[in-house]
Length: 333
Image (cartoon, rainbow, N blue to C red; front, top):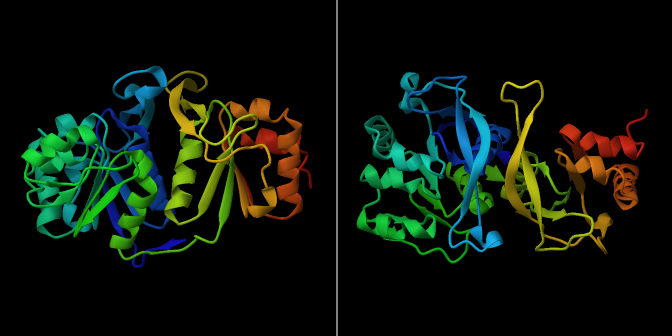
C-alpha cells in the first residue's frame, strides 16, 4: 500500500496529444494511493477533454523512431485559469507532443516556476522536461528524458543523465524525471516517497490474465500501479511466452451509441503461460476489452480462474472481464 497523510494534492499538467499512459497512469495511481489529483489544461475547463496519443516502439514495424496513434479522450477535472498553484504539493508533467507547444505558453512556464520557487516537487517524464527547459529550471540539475531530448536539455544547462534503459528515472532534490511510460513504476514510487508516503507490497505476487485486444488502460494502469507498490507482477497470455506482446484496444465513448475502438499500445508479456505455477501468486487480475470473449472459451483459462476462486485468493475483474468469470461458473451464489 501507499499511505500519504495528511492528504497531498497533485496538479497534472495536460495538453492535447500528451502520451496516453503518461497521463492516465499517474492520474489514477496517485488517486488510488489516497492523493487528490487535479488534471488541468490551459485554455480548457473542467469537463473538457484532451486527446491523447499512443506512442509505441517503431521497431515492431522496422521504423527508426516511435509510432503515434490516436488514444483516449482524457477528461479534465479542474480549470487551469481557476487553479491556485500554492494549494498543491506537486506538479506532474506527462510527455507526448503536448509539451512542445505548452513550452511556449507563458502561463504554463509561470506555473512551473511557482512550483520550483517554492521548492515543491516537480515530476516530468519523456518530453515533459521540455517545459522545464523553457522555464529555465534545468540549469545544473540532473535529469533524464526520452533520449532524443538530450541535446535540447543539455543546451538548457541540464546535467544530462543518458538513459541506459527505457525504465530509468533520476531524482535530484525536488525534481524527478523519467524516460518514458515504461519507467512509471519507479517514477511513481519516487513521487510517492518524495511526498512523504510509505510504500509496501513487495511480498505480494500478482498475475494478470492477458489477451489480444484487451483494453489498453485496463491492463497497464493497474499493472504499473501495483508495480509501483513493489508488488511482483506477471502478465501472461495463452499460447504466448515472455517477451511476446498483445496488441491492446483503446475503447472510448465519442458520441456514438456504443464505444469506439482504436489500436492501442503493444503490451509486452513478462512470463510464459505454459507451465505457469498459479499457486505461487496471491491474486489474479483480469482486464476487459475484447480478449475476454475468446479467453472465456479456453478451458485452461477457466481452470485457472476456478483454481484462484477455490483457493479464496483475490480475483479482480473489470469491464468485459466478467465474461470469463461467468464462463467459469464462479458468479453464482
